[in-house]
Image 1 (cartoon, helix red, strand yellow):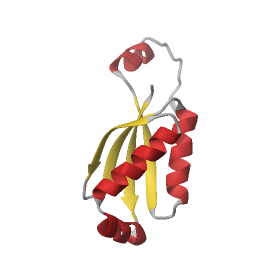
Image 2 (cartoon, rainbow, N blue to C red):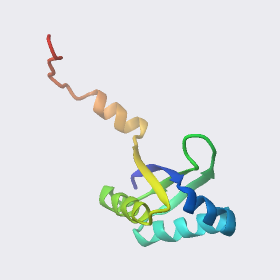
Image 3 (cartoon, rainbow, N blue to C red):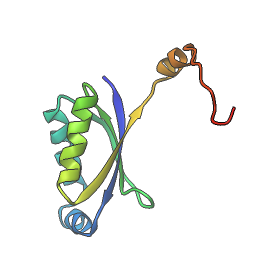
Length: 106
């Protein structure tokens, strides 16, 4: 199953709700949403700085991950960025592909 790094940023409304409901309720809600798309949560960490939470999501495919991202972003309380994670084997396979490319001005 493809893995994605979800980077969440709560707006003021989302932060107030998080303060009221606590972190465990957010983990439960995100776990339920991931299950609804046929996926699962590998890990969930809150943070501070550029992002408020980092979640590793296993999704059955890119469309399912995009659907999860759309649903979360449509809530209006969170901005979610879904980053596809690449395995070492996928990188090895990509490194074996020859690409002919001309740089601008070359």
